[in-house]
Structure formats: structure tokens, C-alpha cells
Amino acid sequence: MGKERRYCKNKTKGSRRGRKWDEATRTGVLMDMIAANNICAVARKWGVPESTIRTWISEEMAKPEGIYEQARREAARQVAAAAADAALKQVGYLARRVEANARNAEICEGLAERLRQDGYPVLSGPRVTGDGYYESCVLDPDGNTVEIVA
Image (tube, rainbow, N blue to C red; front, side, top):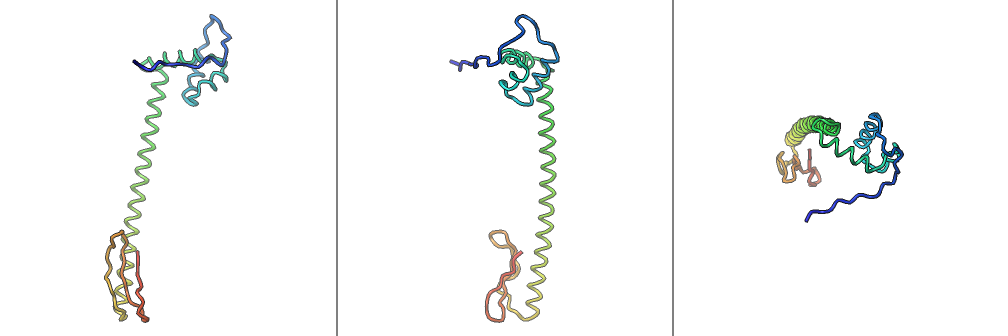
């Protein structure tokens, strides 16, 4: 047995008994519903009963090219554009990180080689550690281990 749909009573009383609302009001109400998605606030703003707004929404949703369908398509376009923009930014960020990591690895290798040439014992050559760092370990003149990390 399906869940019964229940609506709250109209908080905004109708003022047009038997008369139709003009198209500008209907369109304004529906646009506000798309933007705000708060039927009570829209009903108070426009003075239209919630039940009338629900009827208008269901009529618009039934139309294949209604304003809700147009708004849905526009929202989908905006989401797709935002996702594409974010993906491009992420790819750019990753490319910059790869370049920076390569430069840092070169600096680490160069420093380790210079220290080796200057006579400092290199305990472990430039390598990638298990946690993803690029490092080299060298002994200083006092026998302390110095890690060069990039």
C-alpha cells in the first residue's frame, strides 16, 4: 500500500473565488518556486493559496516543454559547466604539482650529490619513501643523520 500524500492546510487564503489568476502572477509564482522552493513563503509573497500553487506546479510538470522542464535543463547545463570547470582546474593543479615534485626531486638529488662530492657520507641515496616523499639521508660532521626531503 503506497504512502498517502498529505498536504498542510492553506496558510494563505484565496482572494479570487471563481476568478482566474493572470498569467504574469502565475509565471512569477512558478519562477519564485523554482528559485526558492518554499511554497509557504511564495504563497505569502504573492497572496496565492498553496493548493493553487501545487496545481500550477503539477500542470507545469506535466508539460513536456513547461517552465519546470526548461529550468531543469538550465540547471543541468549549469551543473555540467561547473563540473567541467572544476575538472579543468583540478587537472591544472595536478599538473603544477607534478612539475613542482619533479623540480623538488632534482633539487634533492643535486644537494645529495654535492654533499657526496664534499665528502659527507650519504646513508641512503635519493629515493621515494613509502609515504611518497623524495628523500636522501646524509651524515653531518658530528655524526647526526640529516634528511633531505622534497
